[in-house]
Length: 367
Image (cartoon, rainbow, N blue to C red; front, side):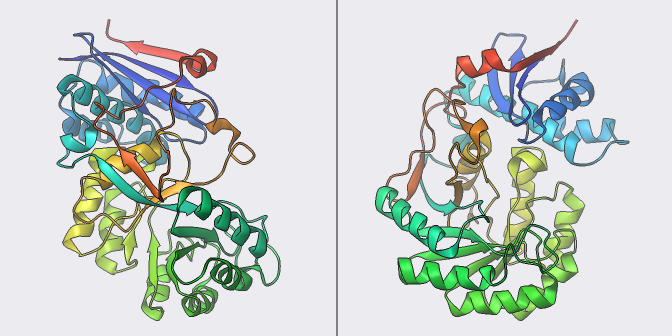
């Protein structure tokens, strides 16, 4: 069974990919979000030439082939584009075998605990606490992540005192029974990250994500060495040697690969394997409600070192208007703080035809 055609349907923010085999079987995947229209161009220019005509069921060899053939262009765009074909091939195989992707990689369908992940920094501690309380009442969440510092803020907060006020306000509103997580988005120097981290510890926050510039692994390790809570990171990294260095260095307590940034499921499984050997859990980055969160759900149902929870964005159309209307039915329904991987074949989701009709379309095929 050979890959006969690769189609992309993209906007600036989202890009879905359909792969068709010469036997007629099809599968759906997605390139990474953000500048997905540019990534779709990379897909057709630098991934499709090597994928067309390849064995549709030999996913791992193709994942290794493309970066080697495109050796002059290592880095994020190539891997974000590769994800589109790779994830579509997993869907194709799942549909062919009548199994969910999680079962193809050794897992089982079922539920996952989710944490409600806030993306907002233009929100007061009191407003965030009120929002979390509403979500707990409506959906049963028992874990919440909030933002501290400013994205690449160089120790300058969104406004003075905001970071210090977040954990106390949220803990007071929600009580001691919920888990709290904080994300620094590369906002701090080690000195300031340690200050904030100790204050977070005082209020029972158990997860401090990307406290320092993400590529400065030694800085992150200094923060980890100074604190008791889990220091986490890795979402931006797409190169496997960087992951090996991060884990060997002991820079983080929890690894957080992003399936779409990293190049797909095969490469993410390799990172999860590195982490397992080092005794580290995996809590992937999945910060929007495109297919990346569904890919992550299947992954977490299969790996032995899955972290405590799934990241689930709580932002609606006011923050992410491009998330609307992607799917025929919602794969992210939350019940008692949990989401479910079903036993439907492949990824178990259907892209909304109306969305596809509005997207920019491009096709590459064998001659």
